[in-house]
Amino acid sequence: MRPALGPRGLRARIVLAFAAGALLVSAVLVVTTFLLARNYLLDQREAAATRTAFVHADLLRSRLATSGTEVTDALAELSSGGADVVVRTGGSWYSSSLDVGALDVPDELQDLVGSGSAGRVRAPSPDGPRLVVGVPVTTGDLEFYEVAPLSELQSVLHTLAAVLAAGALAATAAGAAFGLWASRRVVHPLDQVAGAAARIAAGEVSTRLPPTDDPDLVAIVGSFNTMVDALAARIERDARFVGDVSHELRSPLTSLVTSVEVLATRQAELSPRSRQALDLVQQQLAAFRATLEDLLELARLDDDAAPDERPPVSLGALAREVLAVGGRPAALLRSDDDARTVVLGDKLQLERAVRNLLDNADRHAGGPCRVGVERRDGSVVLTVDDAGPGVPAEDRERVFERFVRGPRAARGSRTGAGLGLAIVAETAARHGGAAWCSAGPDGGARMTLSLPAEGT
Image 1 (cartoon, rainbow, N blue to C red):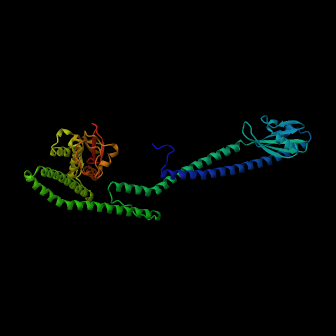
Image 2: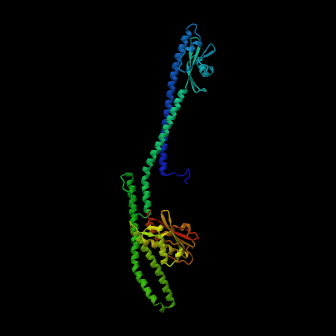
Image 3: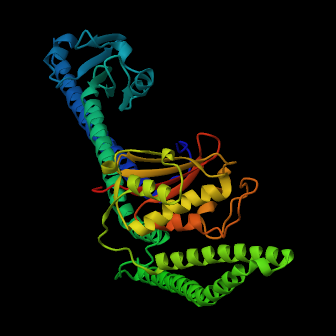
């Protein structure tokens, strides 16, 4: 699993960049809008409360100017629209409500009004913030205070903050969605290049990137297709060279083999040293001939295009036939029913691949100890186990490369050109399958050939 703080892919970084940008812009707009709205609403509320307090203070002064009017009676007649009035006169405090008194008037506001100036102060309370407006009334040496609650305004600001936060989250989500769309647009050409490269690596050298009108991608597409053209031409030239050399060597090799066979018919007339030299020449010619046949087979596999239609072949029956032709015991084979092991392919090529797996076990591991053919999901898998020294894990992929020999062949094993397993791998790829090497159950190596089953 990728670590939580590990490197992120290009698509994830683009999405995160768009989301972060949208979040940043939204946060700036939200904070700016909230502060402007808050200051505006507070200013409007304070201005309205101040005007109301002056009006009420003037009304109170007028009422008290009427002879016989008490302060408590004048306060009862005031309609303050939800605000409470507190009055100090002659050292005594009077209030229009039992919930508000002298303790609700801040000391700094009392000092300010006592000095003859009007003012206002926002003060906290258990029921929420309040705005206290103080107005000095010269007539009657009276101090007028109006306490207006701000809880309704606070609720409005909380609702506004919630709405703005929800809008910011929605904008962030929209930015992330747009970033996802943009990342797909940006990464799509890279996906095309990666897919084309994967198909080319799998052997489809005819793959090319489609033409584009995007001026930023024209150079990349052109360079990639030019590179693939050069690679395909190089592969074709190398394959043609190998095929031509193999064909050119076939005729002189046949003549040489025929001449050696003629000498072998008169082997009895030769001295012991000459007979020994003749045997060595025969062995080397046989190895040379096998290598040449392998080269020709690889050249055919490289040159011939895969046919559109292939006949059905039972891999279990084919393995049984190859064992019988090679003189190997039939008991080596453990196979599912022939009907379950049917694949679509070229019988001659598949027969050559199975024979190469068996010959590889004969040459390097003392022969196969078990051959298995079974149906696994949508594939038919053929395995060849041996009791040799096995193949190191670091060499299990290299043994299927051309001209590569295993470093730990069994003692006394015959050397080869390193082309047999390469033919197996090429045949498997040509049929849409794969070949690989793993550790066998008896400590040796297990060579596996997997092909798509018929109908998959």
